[in-house]
Image 1 (cartoon, protein in one colour):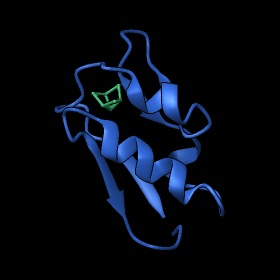
Image 2 (tube, rainbow, N blue to C red):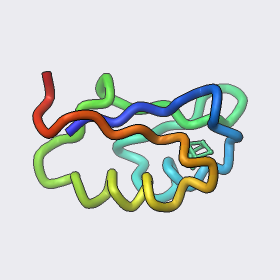
Image 3 (cartoon, rainbow, N blue to C red):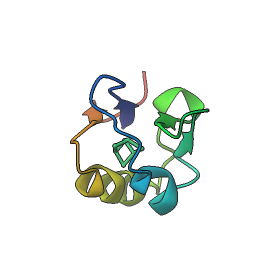
Length: 68
Ligand code: F3S
């Protein structure tokens, strides 16, 4: 599973890095950025899905099942 924050959509609400700080971090203006190149570690899929579900801007894009 991979995640990516669409910077054109992100408005810096910060829920992603509050809810899943291992998967997302803020950049210098508070927008979310995926960690580890967006690769979600095994067992953290639920955390990624919580972040996706809580982003008000629908800015977090999920790609694929396995890291490429
Ligand atoms: Fe941005 Fe959504 Fe996170 S607006 S900071 S990707 S909760």
